[in-house]
Length: 201
Image (cartoon, rainbow, N blue to C red; front, side, top):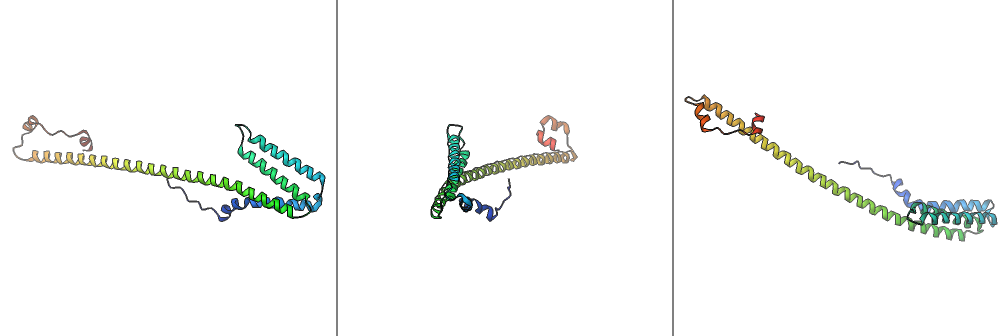
């Protein structure tokens, strides 16, 4: 019933929030390094990145079509397509204005998609916590009812045992009195002891 409370480190809690910006910034930095090493105005490199970006987009389309489509694979493929397109433009362009504009646009789109995922995750977590709380309350109620029932049974058994003990003591005391006739008691009828009481004796 008692689950351990695990406190997350602040870095582990903040990492998902900075991951989209970190990813797009890394792509931009690598593309600018590539630009400085000969990719600027290189038609072959531009064609390569365009082909890779289109292939990733095609894979995303294929992964999202039909009933067997997987949204995780499709999202990953589209993200790779966007990253390759950003890297191709940032590597091909000679200035920083267009790559920075695309970086800002890609970061905004990444945060928009991530915020949607975060909302869904938060809703699922809240629903799970509510279900867990309801189950705990139900189990606690059942435990309380069973404890009351067991206590009542114990009290009934104690009362029966006490009655049997007092009756036995009374019969012993009466038998010790002068003039006690056991035959007269048997013919007049004795109070019967219950099965629980005789077992307790």
